[in-house]
Image 1 (cartoon, rainbow, N blue to C red):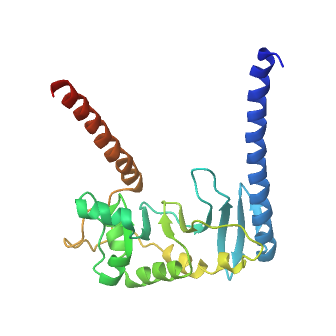
Image 2 (cartoon, one colour):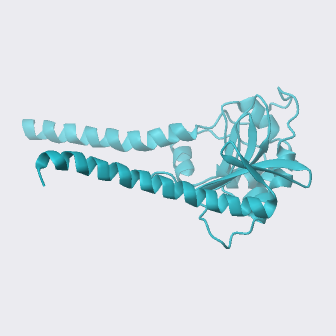
Image 3 (cartoon, helix red, strand yellow):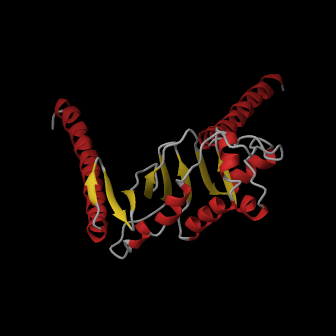
Length: 237
């Protein structure tokens, strides 16, 4: 085959292969969410499934994941407020930044909750006052006990996320409706600012994006420093 033809054929094959993978993922996503939607009586609109369960209007979306993103299931209810927060279990990365003194997580005063969960928020007063309510903390813990790995509020929705979440015909549709009572309760946000702002609460936690950036930046900086030191040592000694 002439070289000029190869230059055209190879990129076309690569593009078709990538397009095929994307279409396969979309079809996989639609098949799975449609099955759950049919079982729950939910309908598709704007790329997500929408339904009502026990008087609670909700939405859900499943993403099959990609090379750099694990699969996840989002179940969420509408919740408009001026505040935002994200709750995850305190993992190895979070503990590492805590020991370095880089992160200052929001503390609720509930020792058991604070030892198990990590609250991230740029609206410190909002999140501090919000999680001062023990019923809010209890609702979050119940969602995590169901298997969900994150509770998030972005100012528009209150969300429970489960990641990774693999597609399977054995998945019970009730996994979608199980956290709805808790999400509905969490979405009942009183007016802000909250009057409760104790000095004992730590300032805002470091955001996940900042953590991720630092996790990459620190090793790279050490590598560059080591490389420069190696060259300097060879030149001088």
